[in-house]
Amino acid sequence: MPAFAESGGGGAEPPLVESYLDLLRRGGIAPAEGRAAAAVEERELPLIDLECLMTATGDEARRAACAGAMARAASEWGFFQVTNHGVGGALLERLRAEQARLFRLPFETKSRAGLLNGSYRWGAPTATSLRHLSWSEAFHVPLASISGSACDFGELGSLRGVMQEVADAMSRVAKAVAVALAGSLMQAAAEAEAFPAGCDETTCFLRLNRYPACPFAPDTFGLVPHTDSDFLTVLCQDQVGGLQLMKDARWVAVKPHPDALIVNIGDLFQAWSNNRYKSVEHKVVANAKAERFSAAYFLCPSYHAPVGTCGEPSPYRTFTFGEYRRKVQEDVKRTGKKIGLSNFLKQQPPQPQ
Ligand SMILES: C=C1C[C@]23C[C@@]1(O)CC[C@H]2[C@@]12CC[C@H](O)[C@@](C)(C(=O)O1)[C@H]2[C@@H]3C(=O)O
Ligand SMILES: O=C(O)CCC(=O)C(=O)O
Ligand SMILES: [Fe+2]
Image 1 (tube, rainbow, N blue to C red):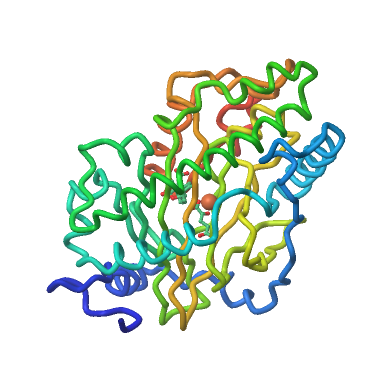
Image 2 (cartoon, protein in one colour):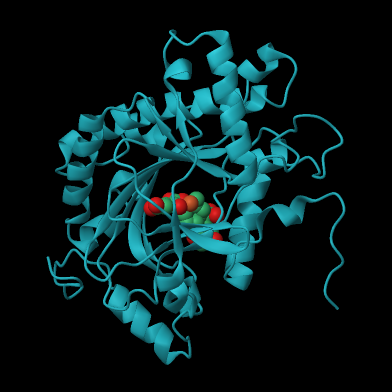
């Protein structure tokens, strides 16, 4: 498959080239950040062995040490990588093969409302400049619909089963990590076990990402800089690389690790932890030669449950995930950018005159 096959006429590639050239014509300049990409340092994320949490073998002391290491990483990095997570390598290989088949469907088929619950998106929904363009395509699938009959998998019958297995395995990791992180901030272990309130398979998402090879790399985002609008994300990336996160005000490239999954704190967990845990900005830099795949599990609460706090006083007012999502979409529509948590601070920063 060439880097960007002619779109339309049954081609699989979304019309990213046309979108890029249109934004360039409309005065968008290629984001300068990409040119600095060469200077970006590659770092190993904090590596945490989850065996003591994911199996009954771990004793209390090992579990406490594991929770402590995650809490430090969640505070200092907002990201860490985990091994012995229980999500089988063979299963992740099957997912990657299924993703390759799914994204090879014609663009018209992928865009069709019925396929995967109409969850397809590409480029930039509301791009007004190249800085909003993501050289990627994705299916952002509500877990509830994966098992639901309403979700049309087209001719990809085996995809449903693989996505269900991956979602089940990743949700176990997400839950175990969330409870351990909450327990580090709460005295009552029982309360931590119930954390996060209102999260279940009907409220979480599995996002399948594909990043086509990009003729405008490295000046183009594979995925624009953002923070995740959830409690936490469990991410499986392949070995191509390109994920970067903000650390001490500099972009840092995340070195892929063949056996590890990446966990990152989302906006809601930063709010719940009263800013102890950080929802850190991250992006994907486009790759000139290789296509890249990733799959992200988003641990999200129901739209109605207040996000809550580990303890008052919280810097944030009470808000629900529904309010949060609506505000993000409203801000993106109005400004092209997500504003996020600062909208929900009790003390609003002085507005620029
Ligand atoms: C975790 C996510 C937040 C985001 C959707 C995504 O799954 C990955 C891209 C994110 C992003 C970045 C640009 C915009 O801010 C945004 C609204 C979008 O369309 O894609 C956010 C999404 C979000 O915050 O909902
Ligand atoms: O593909 C990646 O490595 C990151 C994806 C991501 O940040 C997301 O889907 O929110
Ligand atoms: Fe993300």
